Image (tube, rainbow, N blue to C red; front, side, top):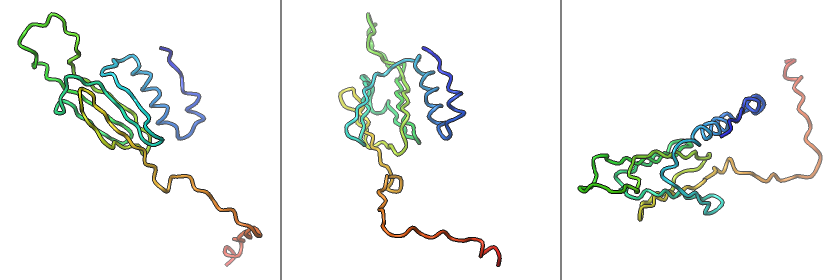
Amino acid sequence: MRQFDLTPYRRSAIGFDRLFDMLEANARQATTENYPPFNLERLADDRYRITLAVAGFSRDEIELTAQQNLLLVKGKKDEQATGVGAFLHLGIANRSFERRFELADFVRVDDARLNDGLLTVDLVREVPESMKPKTIAIKSGAPLKAIDDSTSKAA
């Protein structure tokens, strides 16, 4: 994969450090394993769903951790829990994993369920009222007068 140098953009884009760090981290992780496979769905404008294929894992073997802007899914399989017989072919992945998902601001985990070997994690984006766009009413009439600050300095 090609390496991109983001240095010129870092110099002129103020406040986007987290975005550049995330892009660089994703470029480094692109060569790592893609286990377990997952789907990412957009259910509505503010609702998302991540579905991971975790066949063979029980609820006790999966750990879901939500931190600020990060969702971490870990699966810990006991290496000694193999069957009694000798395998002729071992095609079902039975290994521990760690999968990270970067979350946007104001995205939180709403629900997580394990059913038929699929772990579904529902996410919801809740922007606080103070951060939502507001329509400003335009008034008519004369503009406000400028405040003369020189009178208070002379006193």
